[in-house]
Amino acid sequence: MNKNKCKICSKILVGRNDKLFCSVKCKNYYHVNLRKVTDRHVKELDIILHRNRSILLEVLGKRKGQTTVERVVLEKKKFTFKYHTHLHTNSKGKTYYFVYDFAWMEFSNDKILIIRKEK
Image (tube, rainbow, N blue to C red; front, side):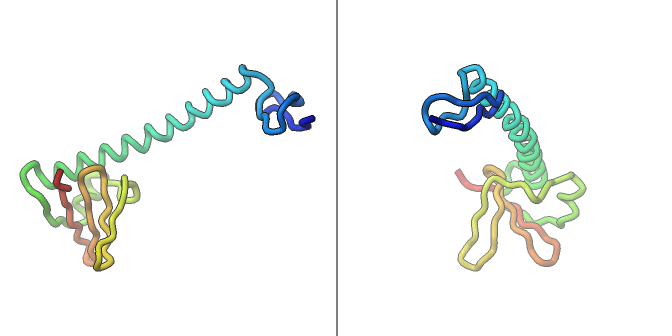
């Protein structure tokens, strides 16, 4: 006999030991609200990532493959450096931060190298 309580309504659970909810209604309520919270956070991050990509595209231009700019140029455009989709460290230990198909690498002298990843 299971002495655990339902995660939603705190009723004592009857049945399997690994049961978490007393009914389908409580289970659905839990998962719907979990999805709402997750969707809200994902949407906020997605907006930041898309804005960062747009900024990199604007600075780099449509024809160039790479360019170097001052860090302040990206900061003035409200580029958020802490968010990226993935990263890559090359054999020399330099880290490239990616936002979808664009990457940037920071240098110690406040220069930023922006690169468009080839498809």
